[in-house]
Amino acid sequence: MSSPSITDSHCHLDFADFDGNLEETVKNAVQSGVDRMVTICTQLQDEPKVRSIVEKFECVLYAAGTHPMNAHKQPMVNVSDLLEVAKHPKFVGIGETGLDYYYTKETEKDQKQSLLLHIEAAQKSSLPLIVHARAADKDIAEILESEYKNAKFNCVMHCFSSGKELAVKMLDLGFYLSMSGIITFPKSDELRDIFSLTPIDRILVETDSPYLAPPPYRGKRNEPAYVAITARKGAEIFDVSYEDFAHQIEKNFERVFPKAKIYGPAA
Image (cartoon, rainbow, N blue to C red; front, side, top):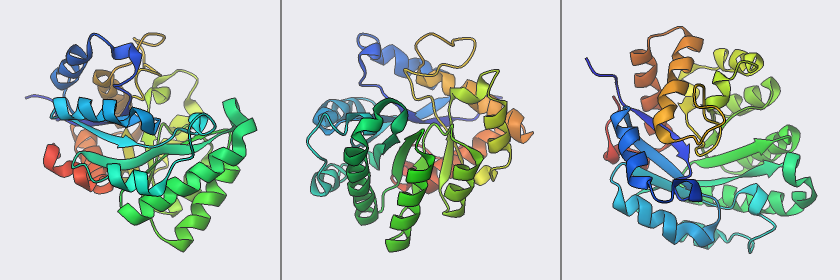
């Protein structure tokens, strides 16, 4: 009996790390039971390149926005531009956006303005917001809670590695937490504990490749095929079979990314 298919809900296939072997990377993923990938465009000027990838590979979907670490490097994002690219049938989410005070605290003002504009696009498009949060738990919680009160939107906390307080606040809003390879790292006990207390119907899995490869590939280039390793750790955390966990996270993925349904049924 073959393993059920799963989705890598967040990767970066347009990055230079995949130049020259993108076809092999996608093939490896599919052979590993990863039947869908969402590749994330982190600056709108690269959207045409990312779009060309999804138009080449049936199993690849995409989202686009301005990564918070790029907010000061690019022209401020325009809501109408986001809504225009969102019309593509394989465009499934807004972002990634968010706040990163670990590396780019000095651009806090630009990051906050960009985040608010992405939220507006998510509200107007009814597509989920994809959020990056690093060393900014208090501000990210305040902004998302405040804007959600103004107009509801769905949201994925991508590569979640923040504290329990932020996790609880995001779950209270009905948002989703996405597991990355970080949960497989030996020193991630606290993060595994947070996920173990999260409702299983609010969980997604991702690679964030080419970053954060799980063992035995840690320190090497990550790729979508390896999301299966993270999913197996997720099944262990929830004390369920891999098959049951895979089935659940596929249902979760299609609930938060409804446009993705036609590109592969849940396993």
